[in-house]
Length: 415
Image 1 (cartoon, rainbow, N blue to C red):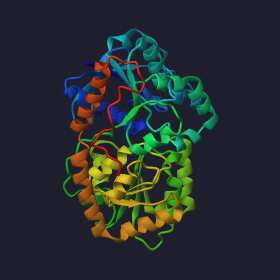
Image 2: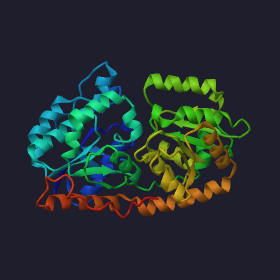
Image 3: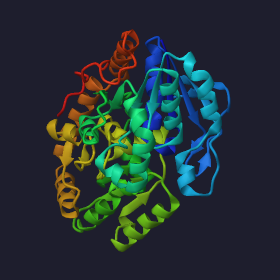
Image 4: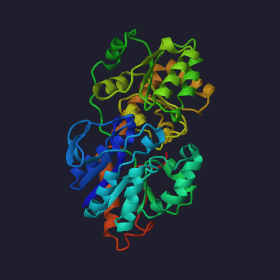
């Protein structure tokens, strides 16, 4: 079986989906599936230094490599054009090479690469799945609403309806997309995860690195810095905890203008002295933050999955989430942290409760690590994804958009 995964970017600055597609393809290849990736050299404001117009082996976090075809994106000083990630070279390559694959797995919508890939596959009669990455969720569709409505109705709706099904990473994402009446089948299969190697004395090492007392509580935010992450509410909430002892560790990067806005929010809320801004983190440094923190917070308006949450839970760090994060139901049902409304006072009360109860944090963190290891291995995810692929390819009606979909995965049930 030969499968091509198409995604606009594999840059770490684009967050969890870029990391997930590399690990997904690696897991599929370990099952004997000939899976490749086609993408661009997008890196946010810059470009990745990757080989272009050729197949090369790209490293995967945790070891190993996967085959990637990378093409240059169109440069532009206009943010909207740059974020659309246009690549004529990728489109031309897809027109020539897509037919050499049995199936396409397309990641993201409302972006040039996935739109082109779906249109080409549809016109050439190649079966494909679409993974919307939360772009069909209610909150996402309210951002640039008119532009997205036009794009969806004029271009993307036909592409989505022509797919063999939509790949959702959480039931909540699937339910929100159902409101669009696309009449397209689908399945729910979450991201997988490789369990991190424990860092000895992570808590002590992190506090030494940050020059904090050994018993200083640390609340960690680690994600892309973007308005949808609800950082304005989180910062305002933490500002209300004037009598609580903690340090706010802010790890991530984003648009420079938004980062400046966050600096203003920290200053205006009197949190500058209690905050350590450490920028984008990778590798062992990232694991040190995850394993050394006491509490992970993600108060997003919308997250179709929230890979950073899963990473924190795998590190044994309980999470404080809002309902817009798809993993919030899992955290609430399995008692892996705290879930509260996306409202300043509610976040403040949940954070205070968590910071005041060290034993509860340890218990929830231990349980979180066990659940992630048991339910979210890439081996299990790849096995179920392969079943979806084979069902489509073995069906005599592979062009149907609804009849070839296997029932949602038993691994990931609604919490």
